[in-house]
Length: 103
Figure (cartoon, rainbow, N blue to C red):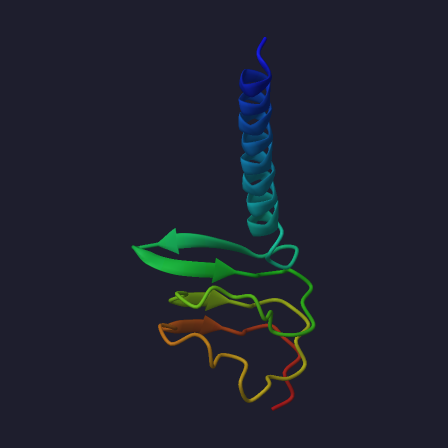
């Protein structure tokens, strides 16, 4: 096999391996971006983020900013920071029932 053809084949192989690695790390990152017990879904056409019974002690920071409904019920959240929901401009519904919120 000529040298030029081997170099081209090697380059294409390396490019494909790199693309596969980037795709895999992207998928893993998105799969592990949320706290344990939390997951996004869709209800009645609205983006929903559920963290019910997830044993949370604080409001998660990585809530998708296109969330319309947020369920943080049945956790152990003791207080809400003033800016806890600042990055959620589309939030319509919030469930904080059954937490340890003092005020």
